[in-house]
Every structure is written in structure tokens, then in C-alpha cells.
Amino acid sequence: MSETMTAVLSELGDLPNWDLGDLYPAPESPQLASDIEQVRADAETFAKTYAGCLASLSGSELGAAVAGYEDLQERMGRISSYAQLVYAGDMSDPATGQFYQSMQETVTAISSQLLFFTLELNRIDEEELERRLEVPALARYRPWLRDLCAYRPYQLGDDLERLLHEKYVSGRAAWNRLFDESLAALRFDLDGEALTNAEILNRMTDPDAGVRKRAAKSFGKVLGENLRIFTTITNTLAKDKEIEDSWRGFARPVSSRNLANFVEDEVVDALVAAVTESYPRLSHRYYRLKAKWMGLEKLPYWDRNAPLPEADDRVIPWAEARSTVLSAYADFSPKLAEVGRNFFDRPWIDAPTRPGKSPGAFAHPTVPSAHPYLLLNYLGRTRDVMTLAHELGHGVHQILAGGQGALMADTPLTLAETASVFGEMLTFQALLKATEDPAKRKAMLASKVEDMLNTVVRQIAFHRFETRVHDARRKGELLAEDLGGIWMDTQTEALGPAFEFDEEYRAYWAYIPHFIHVPFYVYAYAFGDCLVNSLYGVYQGASEGFAEKYLEMLSAGGSKRHKELLAPFGLDASDPAFWHKGLDVVSGLIDELEELD
Image (cartoon, rainbow, N blue to C red; front, side, top):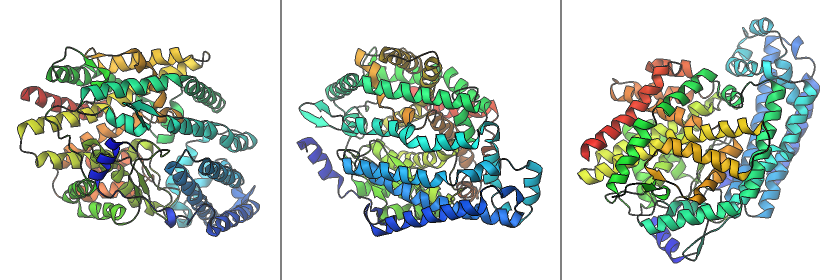
């Protein structure tokens, strides 16, 4: 480890490592082997009992069948979650990769026996199913059945569905693994240090402009040297998606993601249009200000997230980060903080950066009978504290939604970002309130605006990149130069004329994992940010009872859709004006910065 990293780590204090023992003691544990054999046998019995006869079951019998299916999904989910978390801890270890792949193949083989269940359910006549839903045992699952029925028009024949399901581990999942391991294996030279992905990205926010430049150049250089593999992965997965979308009858590449999010195409189109139209008054205007503050006519791309001279650039110890976030949560709702405190009091967080570890951050919900785990790469920057607030929001949301059970706890991506972004807003407002120095308040406001621009403008630019890539791929394979060109077009359009980009920036598209893992995920961040801006506005003007309604919304998990969830707050995401309300919050903060200038 370098002297620089050693010095930083010494200031952070004791960083927590997660203990996955609440799922399984170890990959080779008898408990895991026993659970695999038991769920395999139970899946076989379930298939023998129900395959081919769902249409003849009474409402109570069908309710019992769905409950049995939910139990099997929960148990398989525990196995899959454990394997995913072990793998995320060290993607560079061949034995870990082998274990992860083995568990994926095992669970896929078991779940293949259960595939008939949802396919048969979707063939039951809607009126007949509605009659059976009068029975309480089945009525509990009404939201899940509603969402399942939404896939009816896109459902293929049983054999085709089973083929696609079984080939997933040797198809898309294998390409995802190749991407993850390839990115995790890269090392980026900076002044003689060989840095990981997380470490080099952290240096791009260094107070020293020279360090930022050298880090950005090194990052782009190494990505550029590895573009062949990332281009192949991107082309393959885009073609794979095109083939499946065509068979299922989706009109546009984004449509399957919109269906999974249970949000209408026109709602997403309205969001994208509103953000794109707002580029000039948001990102273009802000970055002109930032260039002026930094004494530059144009910002080099590596200064996009550069801290202002007045910014707090000290290393924030873990204990302080914990206190900051939990205090902000508690000021809003003691119950929210109480749930969040579990993550710190128990070994549910993995915070240190290390070679081979998954870059970035995530909250993994695992299964309702267990609890979520948070993965961070904590290096003590203010943005790392905000990331902690973000991921803790996910974790709290996942715990509260767990009461819905394995089939209905998961929230669509568009709503899954609500608690995380709201948690960031609570933390930011608490920090701002505690800061009296005008220069530091200005720096904090600027940092928050940049976070919002990264969440809204940058993610919609990512969405537009994906849209153009998938549209172009339908005409033939794309070269690295083609992908780089689309990247530059969408980035310069979004960031505006205040920037200048060097050649190596053309390769930066290659490291974005969402393009690979979950195509068209990224607009959910903008959806969530605009939603939270509007929601926070309601909170500021609300009488007592807002926190209770908010926790009730989180506890609903996936049992309600966005219209029903937002109605108690007087919000409607299907109204085009809704997005402009959220964007006006960002614009208002930029107005405030202009007045302070």
C-alpha cells in the first residue's frame, strides 16, 4: 500500500467489514450445502404437485401455491445473495469467481423447475382469476399478480422461456462477470502508485489540480488500452437485448425497463425531455460559474468535480460520518435513525477499499428473512459521507419493505432511489444548517448542485448515450470509435460549452457498470432526484405527520405503484409539470449561488 493511502486510512479510524454469517458461515459450509439440497428437493415436489393444474385450483388452493412459491424464492434468494456478496468482496480471486458462477448455475437450474408457475398463472383467464382473488389467502398477493399480468403480452412459449432462463448463466450473466472482473483487474498508474478503480476516481476530486489531471489522464489511458474487450462486451449485450426484445415484441430498447419499473413510456419520455430542455439553465449555467470561480475560461474535464478552494477537504473519520448521517436521519424521524443504526451496530457494512473489491457502492437487500448489506469504498471525502447517507437510505427502505414478503418487497428502480436520495438531502441540509461561514456555505451549496447535476443531468446524458448505442447497434456492430463518438456527443451536449475534453475522455463510457448490468437503469436516478426534490418541498411546508406518511410509503415496497404512493403527498409523476418542479429546485440553488458570486 502506498504512503499516501496509508496516511489517509490512518485518519479514517476503524472501518467496518461485513460479516456474511447471517446468511451462511462460509462457501463450503454444511448449512449451505444442506439448503441447496433441500430447496432442490422441494422445488421438484412443488413442480410435481402444481405443474399443469393451476387453472383447476380454488382461490384458497392457489393462495397456498403462491405462498409455497414465495418460500422457495426466498430460500433461493438467500443462496444467490450470499454468493453475490462473497464475490463483490473480492472479484480478483479465481476461487471466489468459481463459487459465484457455481451458485448462479445451481440456483438457475433449480428455478428452471419453477418457471412453469408464473407462465401458467398468466394463462388463467383474468375474470376467473379475479373471482379467486376474493379469497384472503390469494388476495394478499394481488399486487404481485397485478405486476405479473403486466408481462402477459410479452410472454413467450414455455420452452422458449425455459431456454432463455437456463441460458442466462452462460449468456448475459457471464458477460457481466467478464466486465466486472476485467474492470476490477485494471490498475491505474499515478506518480508510481498502482491504483484501483475506486482509488483513481477518488483522486479526481483531489484539491491539487495537477493530481486531478494526472489521475484523469491515467484513467482514460488505461481504459483506452482495454477498449477492445469493453467494446465486445457492449456490442454483445446490446445485440442480445435486441434479439430478446424482438421476440417479446417490445417496440423500443427502453420499453422492457419501463415495464420492469411499472412506469409508462410517456412518463419517462417526459422526464428525459424536461431534463434535456433544462441543460442550459442547469449544467451549462452552473459550470460557467464554476469556471469563473476557478479563474478559467474553460474547465478541463477533470475539473468537473474539483472542490472549490473554500471546500472542506479534510479527511472525515468514519465515526464522524456515522454520527453525521444518523443525526440527520434522527432529526427527521427517530424511527428512521433507529432502523439505520442497526447497520453500524451490527456487521452489515463493508467500508474499506481494497484490491479486487467491487468499485463504487451498493445496498444489497438479500431476502426479507435476513437483512440488507451495504458495500462502500470509504475514503473520507464529503462525497463519501453523502454516499453513506445514500446507501443507508436504500438499506432502511429495504428493511421497512421486507414486511411485504419475498414477492412484493422489491421496489421498482424508479421508486427504489427515493429513500436514498432523500437520505442524502436530509444529511446535506443538516450539514448546511451547521455551517455559518459564508464561504463554506457557498462551497457546500456548490457541492450539492454538482451532486444534483451528476444525478439528474449526467444520468439523463447516460440514458441518451444508451438509447443511441442500442438504436445504432440494431444496424450493425459498433466500433470503439463509434461508441466514443456517441459518448462525446451526449456528454458535450449535457455539460455545455464551459468544458474542454481531451482525446482520452472518449474512452470513459467503458467503466459505467449500469450500461452492462441493468440496461436503462440510469434514468431512475433522475426520476428519484426530481421526485425527492418535490417530496422535500412538501416536507418543508407540511404540518405534522409527513414522516409517518413517508415511512408508510417506504414500507409499501413493491405493493403499490408510483401514482398510489405519491398521491398522499399531492404529487403525480404522470403530470409533465411534475418534472419541472423538481428541476426548479436545482435551478433555484444555482440562482442562490449567482447571488453569492
